[in-house]
Image (cartoon, rainbow, N blue to C red; front, side, top):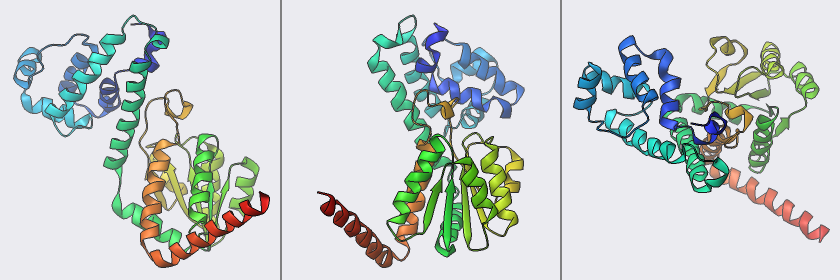
Length: 289
């Protein structure tokens, strides 16, 4: 297969296997090696594969669950579908396969959405919504694609009465953290978890008494030191580079859930705020026409 095209025709099920490798036992890694190296459709019945690989059907089931599937049957359904697409594009130029690219993009979004739903910690998001309800002011900081998500958060929540500001300039982020206080909710977004201006500003704001929330796809344990709440986001390899789909997608999924939950509490007041802001926007448009 042409490595130049790998990012466009990557088998998403195989990618799930790769991400799960660090958590697998040596026996499960044998199964992983088979499915990663395989490039032909064959009989994938659990009995057949267990005999072929000299392992138990129970091991195949555990392997599939570590890859993020409910069981071996669901894993194989996804694996066969993705392998078909992978084989169909082998040796072809991705520019000539718009339908295949469309399926890859669809699969990427679907996988991210599914993983986002699986990763949701209900009590954690309830606590974050509670912080939004009690904060006098909210600062949402991010850079690059995370900055776009921060601005989207501001636009949506301002419409229902929340005093929120999105900040994307590194110097302003640092200054905002330096003047944060007990009435501030300071929220940072960094998919990689390596954007120092975000994590350092969260730590600074926290030290000044502000409540802090970090949205990240990174699993680094030390990140918990800079925030009161750490919300894990789903991610794909190289997602933060935006090579296949919009990097802010998993952030927006979580923000949609937060928005819906926040709005559902005291909806009458928030509906009044929403109508007031929409009316103000319409009046401004009328004046400018």
